[in-house]
Image (cartoon, rainbow, N blue to C red; front, side):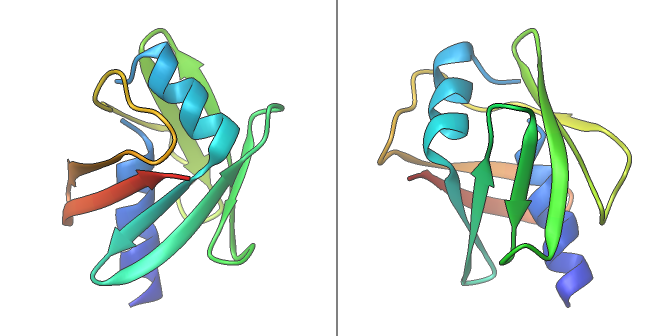
Length: 106
């Protein structure tokens, strides 16, 4: 179950986003709701992130209009598309291989 959750989290994390949304995500972090479970993800300016109380660690980078991630659960870099113009407090859904994931920018 944890591996499935982690895979879903990272599919959702890696999606094209515009700079304003990426800036908000990195600055504030996000809370993912996966199968009714809230998972906090914290980003740092030096290109790292943590989730699931430090059990998941990884790297992120901006590639044009994309946010790309890799992690200790999946070392393959994955990039994914976020909606535009989102800010702290906004929620949105992303579709991933495991289904829809709701994200809220903290």
